[in-house]
Length: 442
Image (cartoon, rainbow, N blue to C red):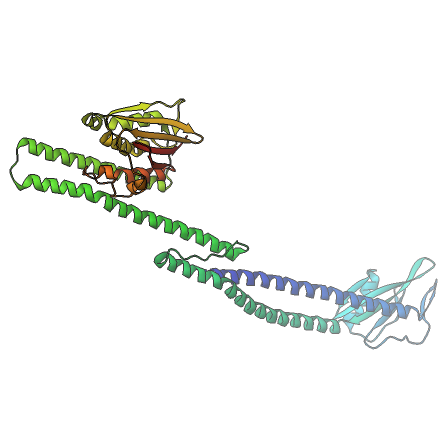
């Protein structure tokens, strides 16, 4: 048998089954109680009839005799009178009923049943001993008819009640689950066409509003994930365009005519620098995407990361005749990010110091609370106050870098990666180039 697929059908069958079992138990219990009550009533009536007949007897130590020629037994209430084991009076009753009355007296039992009659024996005592007995029989036909009628009525009532409950349950389940189906369809439509629409149920106060709040949170995560992917793709295409264009242009110029060995060497060096910049860009974007995705973060030594960033720029510093100094922190400090992530954040800033410094540059390190703060300074022209934020936009360069031929990607990548690592990069206008890098401490 195939199970129903929908939750509404499963709930309907589960609740209806439970209600059916409860009704069946209720009907069975009612009928059992009624049967016991009717049986007790029949016994009580037989006992009462026997007690009434006992009042009409003459009892002595020698036995029992009738006070009248015939008792007042009703035709439908047969009564036997026994003196010792001898029958004093017996009604005109079927043989099976007569035998049952005699057997009841002989075995000294209280009640028995025979031929649709309930028999009750009431002992007759004189002088502290039993000298006889009165047996009364009551027909069980009225009680059986009542019991059968009650059983049929309760079954019909149970079926009608079950049908009414099933209809009401079907309507209630449909009404209760209709908002859920509507919310599911809306969420599916929004996830494909409109990532900014939400249910906005307010403060959750019941199951439906909690479900709406959960779906809103799910849509927020889906929207954030899609925005991250779109931004990553856009930044990747934007930030790779310049190095690739430079490589292609230099290769085309080198192949356009025969060149000397020195000219080819210069072209290959420029291509190599562009490839290295391309590699750093891709690595920085991938690292930023990994941090934004919540991947595990490592730890590293703050001074070692700064020293590695300065070492990677040593050739540029030598060509520019700029001395770059790394000042150790007053106390050892550890970063809450991997060393290569910190190096990729600091490297563009150190490159700027080497490129625009006049002779000196420095990297200082200090710990402030739960953060490690780097200051990368140089004695160059610095950044104008109106450019402190614009220089971090991809493709934008400051006034001092207007003619250096750069792509304007380094600072944007440094800030993007720092923010992905829960840090920040900012520029200061302070009589020379000065950049502040804030990263979480371990």
